[in-house]
Image (cartoon, rainbow, N blue to C red; front, side, top):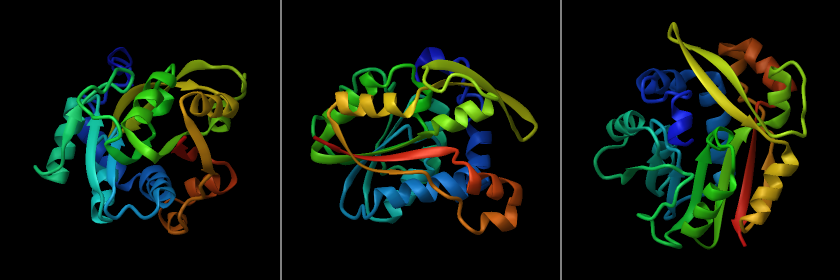
Length: 237
């Protein structure tokens, strides 16, 4: 997410609301979070960059699993929440993924995890090239993003094969947050990975955890029939 896009996706204003909701929101806590951690696999002893770390939920889980985590995010208030969650010992940096990450050394991470960030970007290539640069040889990139079929479904139909911007209004604790995303088809996603030096290892269209059926049955049934997110595991080639 760029600084210009943040005017629409105002995570600065909504940082604490978003952080609280994400801890229990079924789409986050019982769907995307466990799925992307499963794709990341065993992270013990790894140097991990959490690219778009938000309030630090993923970073906390990675640290619990034995990783040495560095977090970056565009939103200062989000990083403040992450700092409260993670403590003073975790490096956190405010940074725009579409710009050079000059403060990070080449080849300094074994794994980059990027959760629900890429769909905010009009162009993936600048971010992917920087993430490729900071990965060690044969390092891995694990990315979750909105499933392209979910975009078309939420819009009530439309151009699956196009690349275009669209918006949604999110209600969070009685407040409305206006968000904008970029739709791109699966083929365009895979082409961007390939062109930026990544080889695809695996792709997942996750299912919700069974316990979601107890707390959010309608959401569980919907996600059991139609994916909301797609997760990629890639290796720097």
